[in-house]
Amino acid sequence: MEDNRPTTPSFQDLDFVHEALLEEYHKHQDAVVDRDLGKARAHLDQFVLCLKAHIRAEEEVLLPIYVERVPEQVGCSPELLFSEHRKMERLLRRLQDRMVQIEQKGELSSREVVYIIEEGRMMKEVLDHHDRRERAAFFPLLNDAVPDPVERRQIWEEARQIQLEAEGLRETFERIDNLPS
Ligand SMILES: [Fe+2]
Ligand SMILES: [Fe+2]
Image (cartoon, rainbow, N blue to C red; front, side, top):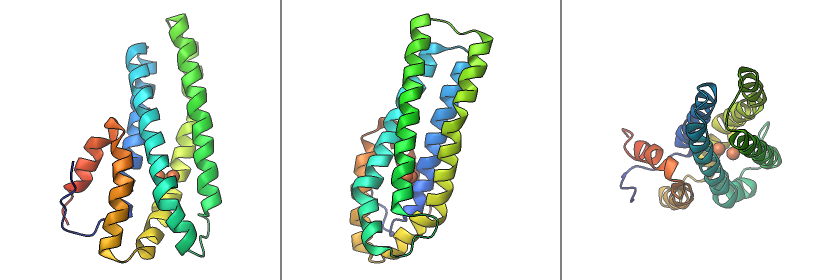
């Protein structure tokens, strides 16, 4: 899938990826509440793949540029972003372990549903904090750090290709590609 937008891409458009990630997580939780284990598993798998692809794009492509070119990252240091990514990965593993336990049991009591939703709150909080930080500082500072449109497009494309490996993010990138300029 080619990005044919004539305009200069903005890293701020990754806001839409964050929204898609949160939506996928909500769908997983909705399915837990409905006790639909198949659906809960499918949305969890999607969430894991999408979040991992997004983190990889940031760490392999965007963060190295950020580290190199943005000297003052008040409230949004690379160390903080990296450590929040690790925290999300730990929470992902916990969610996956919990899902396996549920599947082995084959059913969920009301109390277990409540417990799982409560336990899952931590992931929402980390996603939210991380989203605010990247929205307010990481993405705009990255835009400033890469003012040249040709270079910006090249970096955007590299980060986009990694994220397109997660099927669940393809629709989001189509949406970004079709944004009015
Ligand atoms: Fe992000
Ligand atoms: Fe991130």
